[in-house]
Length: 451
Image 1 (cartoon, rainbow, N blue to C red):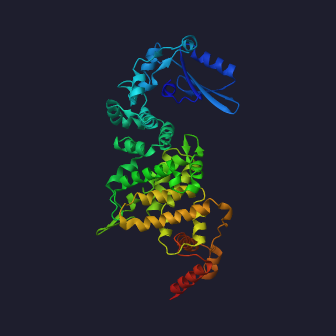
Image 2 (image 1 turned 90 degrees about the vertical axis):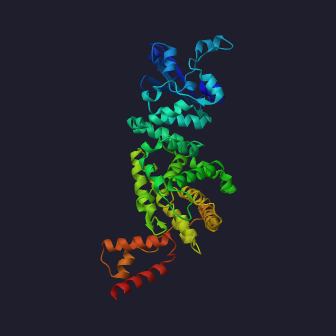
Image 3 (image 1 turned 180 degrees about the vertical axis):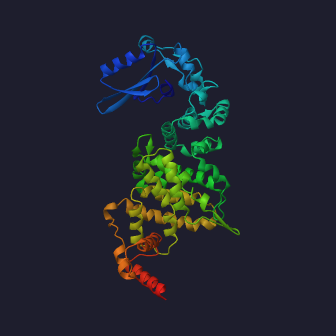
């Protein structure tokens, strides 16, 4: 009823609540409509009907309590506690709504209010659902409801992780994800779900950063949402391609590329917590992206993300400094661009967008303008290459382990792998752009070891 009253019902999702014979009614409907029966939740059955390329979900449930009024009072929010008698829909011109908690008035007032004091005790996941509804419908959460959410946020630890994942990534996918995430953190709801965020406010970053780690992370998400919602600002050529790419579903649980990018944007600097060093007035975070990759993979596994989603977050986190490093060079070779696209191929666009958001969220000072300009120019250049992929030549390694053994007179072993990683790191940052440069470096390294 909520969506019908709000005026955006799409005819793809129906909910029916019945008395004692609700299960028989559900199975009879499935038989008549030739639908697929899915046991959906406790005291609930979902029937999925597919016809002419369209999919319609119809949920059947039994009364929670003795009658319809008891059922409606036992739901989550007043705007969801409204019902309409199906029979009267066909017999009366203006059928009466069953609305014991004044949900229709709250819809008109754009207020989200819990059904009662025990709403979040019965299902703590409703705490996350309140944030999702408020942002999706642009409603305000009533003060007493918000206070209850804060007090009972700890109960989220009792909810099955799979359900938490679904709700959390549905929030990350929202157009207003940045405001939702900020509210989750301000209310202390996000920290029990991702405890690592609790350490962010204590990490000061020093120049050129204007914000502590938490505020920088939230600002980065805000910039990402702005770019996603207005892709023409990133580049008119790609205004259609960017949202199309980010809308791709990666796995079940409302997990899209867009949701993963928002998650990675929030956590992209998680590695700064363990890598922070303070030398006088200078604050450094050496190789924080590699430490962050390990931390974010652990978080992704804890949130029960699938292997592909874990891999995408790892690529984004582990490579989020690449554009900054390349932009600092005087000359950026075609090979360096091809190496970047090779290393980030499953999430190249995401890394580029995060680089833009990251630099925008660092400083608004005039002294930082040159860095921003260089990053924006490089992102534009790489996007040009990325979206004309037919013109991209395949990446080939500059050197192989066999070459190293031959030049250095090494036997197979760990030393070869160590040098190979040094070369790869040098190529990533633009130190090496040709095979000849690597061979010359290897010869000098060999000479130095002999002297």
